[in-house]
Image (cartoon, rainbow, N blue to C red; front, side, top):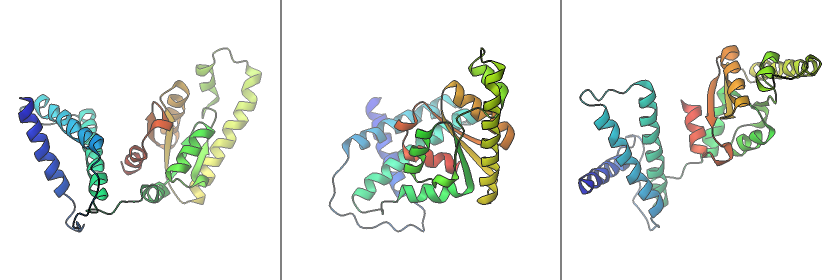
Length: 225
């Protein structure tokens, strides 16, 4: 059974490498080095996607949550295949940072920490488009983070919140955009900031267990989605 599934995965891999848009010209391969680790990951990921075929029988329809996971796996496979093909000159290696810069031009990006801004800038987001909140978007949310916070301590926080909201509105007007993208980690403060931004601005949300360990390709998918 494992051998059969491995052969199926190899076939899918071959087809995926050939399934580029017809407008994209594939070049003749030149000398290169196979990234055996990436290739093994591709095979394993394709085998993992087969589980969706079996679990969705007989209709093969996927609910939104499963569909998102399935498509994310396929996108990851495609990106790894593109990297291998680029190594052999079949495809031109894309400048992901330039693509991120272009895609992020329709957003004001909201995050919770200064070091997250550094990561976003490294990925290609224009620094002026980024707002670092540092606080929730509503003063009452501070009580969720710190139930014992005194009323007197909320006053300066309210002023900070006002500055953050003004900064968001100013940048949306400055860059003539209507969308906010929140990029935070999976912690309580990130969750609260994301929920409020979704309520206030209809923001898109990208969360990660660790932004510093997040691949730029995952961020690009968030911009595309």
